[in-house]
Amino acid sequence: MAAPTNTLHWSNADAEVHKVVVGPYENNVFVVRCKRTGEAVLIDAANEHEMLLELCQALGVTRVLETHGHWDHIQAVPAMREAGYEVAVTKLDAPMLDAVGYDVFLDDAEVIEFGKLRMNAIHNPGHTPGSISFELVGTPLLFTGDTLFPGGPGNTKSEIGDFDTIIDSITSKLFTFPADTIILPGHGLDSTIGSERPHLDEWIERGW
Image 1: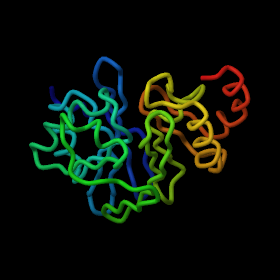
Image 2: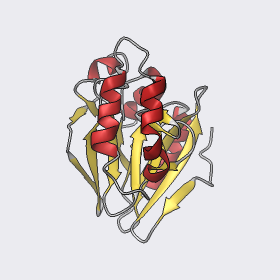
Image 3: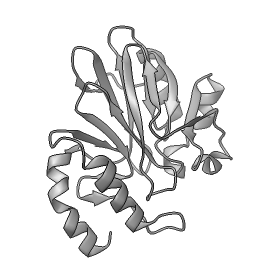
């Protein structure tokens, strides 16, 4: 499948973000690109590897960053690695990639540099033990994986999920961002911190 040509989702003078939706779970895949150097990273090699590889070649991707290890977010990883792209995941979620492989670990508070851009890694446990979000420095963008969606936190009803942990993770690490911060989640539409933060008590009361 050829890469679509209308993938640009957001841009400013320094950076551009491309988005495609792939697979049966409609996963969001983002490419964040430095406009000054052309170097880019891909967030979540979820599915439809042929399209993602074309996207990577067209946009100058050098690394793949996984927000977490759930199967629907990693199905294109083997093809990406075979094509020579380094795949990074947190140490806590790395065992979930045993079947597809990975190359390096991502750490909480790690600064990821590509071109003239920097992203801060933010450990957000709860959906999985090693879930991680990414703040694109100098922009209002926050890539939240499956930790925070429009309407609430990600699913915690699994053996490795924990609702209290994800609520604490969102409250202490994500809701500290300004209200106009744009949330780019692993599925679905964008939102903002200002749109979601007032509903925290509702989420706690409903328990999911």
